[in-house]
Image (cartoon, rainbow, N blue to C red; front, side, top):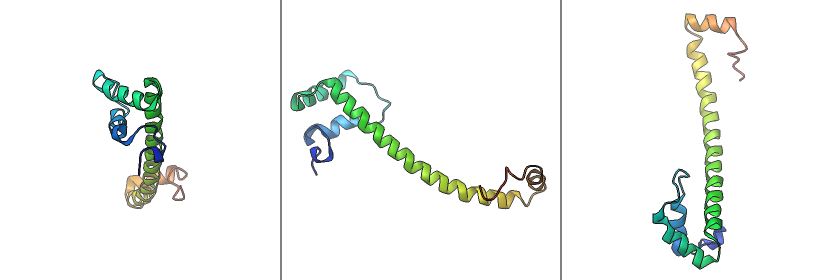
Length: 110
């Protein structure tokens, strides 16, 4: 599948390189990336700032999607872990006292 089919304004030949430039979201735009940005600018007619903006937006969407997926996994894991914790904690003397003092905090329906 070509990069343009996926909504990427860049040719396949430079798409992967450009996306890897800012993929982590932690890197800056260093001088070593200027040739790739220039090549993208020349092949698309976009300005370098437009190219950088497109890459940032794309990576923001990807990070947001990854965060949503992670949140769902964590919710499921935490829910079962919480019930397991309550089961074990409720068997100890400290747990019995804590649950008796504040039953709402240890509500098994949560």
